[in-house]
Length: 168
Image (tube, rainbow, N blue to C red; front, top):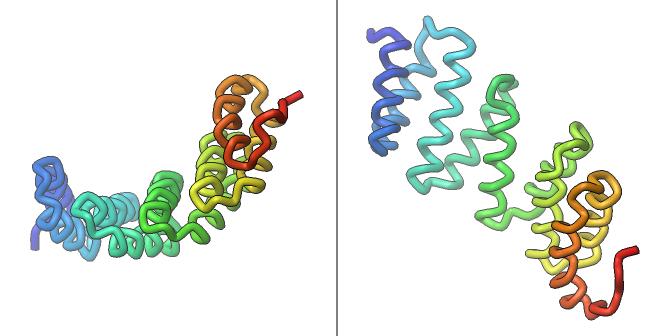
C-alpha cells in the first residue's frame, strides 16, 4: 500500500483545495495504516474531523472529535475541545457546550475566552443571572478587561430590567 506519510500529504493537498470528501478518505486511510506513528495517527484523526466540519457535516464532525478525545488526544486536545464547544453551540447543544466549558474553566481558570463563551451561551439561553455571574467572575479574575466587560453588561442589564444598576 501507499505509505502513511504520502497519504497524509495527498490528504493535506485535497484539504487545501477544499476537496474535503477526498481529504477525509485519505486521512481515514492514513489513520488506519498499520505503520503510522502515534502523532500522525492523531493528526489524521483530527483532520478527519476538520474535513467533516468544513464540508458542513456538523454532527459527524462532532462524533469524530468526540472519538479523538476518547482515544486520549494529546497534541490536538485543546483545539479539539475548542472546536467541539463551537460545534455544540452551532447545533444548540447548550448542555454539552456548558459542561465542556465548565470543565475547561476548572482545569485552566486562566483562559478568559472560556468564561466569555460560557456567558454568551447563558445569554443565548436567556439565563441572564447565570451570564451575569460569569461576567462577575471575569471582573474579579481579570481586572484588566473591566471596560470590555462593562460594555457587555449594559445590554444584559437592559434585558434584566436592571439598567440603573452600577458596577462598583
